[in-house]
Length: 91
Image (tube, rainbow, N blue to C red; front, side):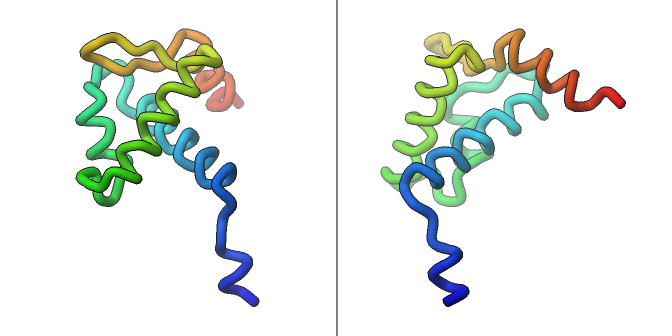
């Protein structure tokens, strides 16, 4: 039964990847990273299509809700994401 409890739904997996992407970008800030660099930081096997696709979806969805900014070159956390991160760190 424990093995079944460890299985994530696709939505839960997407949420976990979004969280990992945002955490990584916040941890690296103010360093600007490319999508390729982010992919290598977050994915266990960045060369696999499924993992690349999952990170691409996470970046797209986080940008759609205003937590990331994407240019042709860089992926950056938004001011809102940075402020929220600051609030979490305050006592």
